[in-house]
Image (cartoon, rainbow, N blue to C red; front, side, top):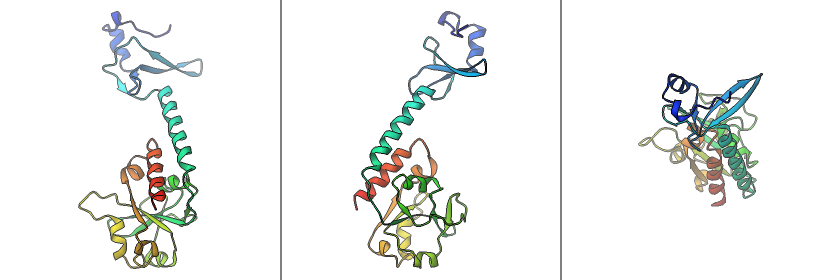
Amino acid sequence: NNKVISKSSYNSKEGKITDKYLTVCPSCSVVWEKVHWRNKILIEYYHEIPRYGKKSVICPECSEKAISEINQKIDSLKTSVNYTEEILILISDADRNVYAAKPESYAGAVAELFDLNNGAKGMEDMGPYPGYTLWTAEKAATSNPGFIFTISPAPEPAPKLSGMLPMIPGFNRLSDVTTGNVAELDPVLFMQAPGPRMAEAAELIESILNEK
């Protein structure tokens, strides 16, 4: 039994029940499902079954293709960045506490793709954001980053952290703040949409550093 249901029988009870188990890939528009057979998981594709009424889930073939394309793009970007100075990726909470992204955070992991020297590496987790550490005014005053990336999750009209740093004690004396070596990162790419858009996040860091 190959589980394929023809168009002529699709309006039957069997076809309607099948809708509960089949999915349609939004990329290739093919209906597919996982089939458990003899302790194995097989992928079945059904080109003759209508797409309507089914949950949209990307199929394994398109998923593998997308992952391969992302990895190829990231590998290409990695060769175009040669920045050796220390960097920081900063974010602020509602109480205006400032936190730095460690390599264990998603934003830090994107920076790690370029082997950037993250000033928060090895620090203890502290604060509301997983993989971030509290970056106090005292710690800022003793740090010496060559470039600062900032993330401002709050929508406008909330001020951007990059614009607030010159007014925060400890941060306002950093040479990269006074010379303008500060850039905003897209919060959607670095906070709200991790994983599938990693190549876009890496591309943004690459473009910022190469425009310096």
